[in-house]
Image (cartoon, rainbow, N blue to C red; front, side, top):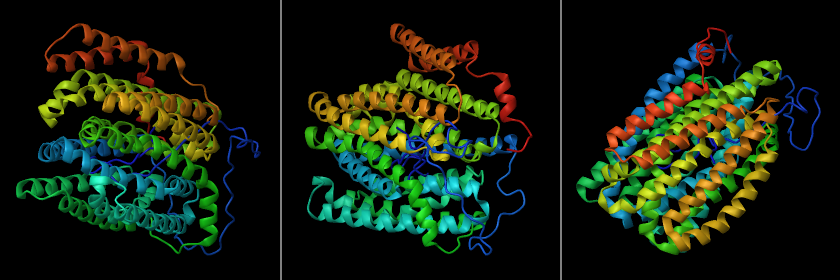
Length: 530
């Protein structure tokens, strides 16, 4: 599933920048001021005569729909550029290391990103949501979140180093021991919570692009000089260090840090512990598949699987752009009337399924060409896993929408129950599928998992927003994607023609079904303040 800002790997535009996020539905316990089993009531913070974190400026955080749409468009442009940089980096890296070496390095990065995800413990999304609601305490909230995140990251680093010393990660142990050093630096990613809460999605895009360019330079240098995997890992640490420093400087202009508070830490933990459980479950089914595959089938199969998954990671720029403005809007949505909340949810769900299904159609149509162009003939076995993971992307995008809404509203206990249950089933299925079908089996299990999580979290989100899931529109988009894929399957054409045909057919079907309309465009370009 996608915690908005699902952790990704170097060379992707979101590495260690975006927060890990979960989501929900309904106002039962919000409007009435009561609670039930599915709703977590956010604590009311008493007025502080001398807040430590600075005060909110007039109009702070208020932006028109048009202004936010323009900022999101700029962010999308930066991320598209980052996508190009990231795929170029991946191509150079995969061709230089070959499947075995690429598999070893990919496993090390997977473990490093997983450690960072565990260390987050739901802190980033909790901090972002609270800053959106309690602007006058922003500095204190953000600094407390940073202190929590750093402490957890240091503990995760120690765990990785101990495991690497014991040789638990096989051929990747030496690389893991270096990559682990970057884990505490990832704590600074919590600073993007302030930018998100202030409707500044472009900040994360800038940081991601900076990292992507630096990482491309590092990979090219290693490839040209013949450096080994350990030296490549040290370059990764250097890139993350520079990116972290730039992020800290940018944050000083948005949300100056205040003094951490034990009371604030208690409030953050009260809201984030279900997210911490969810993060562990997500890490288990999202990242441990590579570890299982490594032990059952070896580094080469991990290389094929990671090569295919790289497209999925990069494609997440679409849902990331969608949920960046969605989080702060939903966090304050309980002051809106029911009709407006319903419109917000409907537009987010419809846009999400169009992005997910449209990307899946293109990935399936272009899978052979993409793998051959970026990785070379040695990675031919990655084509089938990529097609299966393209299907998974539909669930990934829906999961971004559902988990973001639930997390922003504090309705996180159902998400924790869902993700833990799915993770248990996923891991059992991964052992069986990886043993029999290698990377293809792992991808099939991932596809089923993501679809279940995506649909379930959107249902929870609909309930949290007291809104109706736009079933007709969602079903029509699914049907359009399926028909387009069947047409491409039956009519074999050169890949450039298939790409145009896939995009045109799917786009026309979306317009005919009115999954998105001109009224939606007018809403996102409105001059009214959010």
